[in-house]
Image (tube, rainbow, N blue to C red):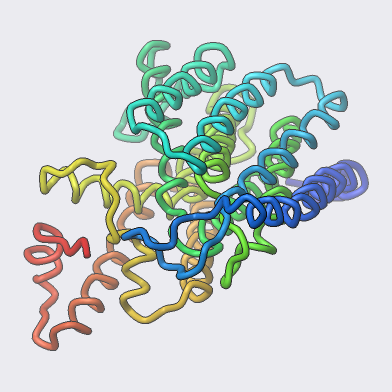
Length: 380
């Protein structure tokens, strides 16, 4: 990236991007007070008595309505400035998930119905929208993949990341902060690559989440609910897929970013690794991977005495550090870099588990992390 490119970027598209973020932010922050008022009037609250709930008062779960509306309105208003037909499939998918999330936040949705609609959304994006991976970039020493396997893998990735953001939404401000980091990172990456449509989508979602977060940090006045988490997860995974494909080796004379899959993994690392760890442990113990518990990373940090804001700062800083590390080491190759990122997460998980064990029992040993807490995890 040359100095002249930076100058051109600052003089040209920066105002455009600021306008997108500003509009989306203002729409989000302006809409939430009305949502809170409506929730109070009609008693549309989250149930504070649930097993996995950390709050003690009734709070609305409809913050995702503001995120969806501000994001969608911004996309539609600025759509004429970019010639990007694929955005129609993304908006259609967001509308479907908006309906699903809203129904779930208000009345609940059967898990099979929820999965079916997520599958439909993934198929729309992959088959009709073309949001699919065509290469694994040497991860597991695999490069090109055929259309069928690439589509199936992409559908799986979309559904998984979609649910990962939903699962990480367990304390005030966490899912929103991770969403802000992800969308801002992808927005900057696409802006550097001069990929205007994708930067446009990323910054629109960034502004929407940022406006919501002003009401969501502890003590939260509103939650994003499934409506917000599902839409944030969907937009993030779509941006990740397009970021990887944009920097595919051979698609350009010189990719803007090397090891693009590794960088995309780093951007989504916290919710992705937490979900993989949770699913592995649940399956290991022959439990449903979708059955909720209090074994997520934020629950475990709470056991160490950290409050909500401290946990958000810790995981947010960790996420940013991993993105920086991936960008700096992008020349080492995907397999090595992803292995390094996952290894760091495993070490962090071991440290947290050991600290929890030591807090409960002074005789707790490092080997107990494997034989006590991995093969016999606490889910209280």
